[in-house]
Image (cartoon, rainbow, N blue to C red; front, top):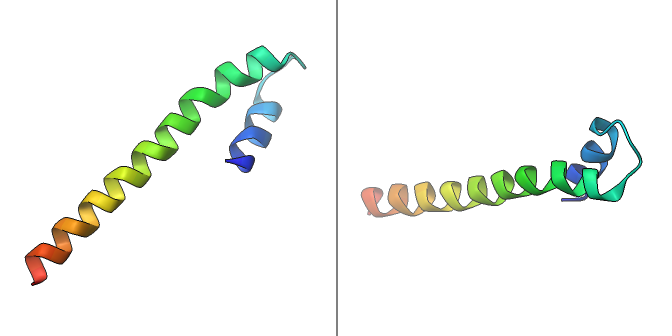
Length: 50
């Protein structure tokens, strides 16, 4: 999450924290969605192998 904050600070052309948060929010949402999907896929693989 810290890396996402740094990336959002680099991407935004201004030093305004609101713009940085607007860039950072979708990236954090996608990060947590990908973690959830990976956990779901892991459980399905574990059930199929058992």
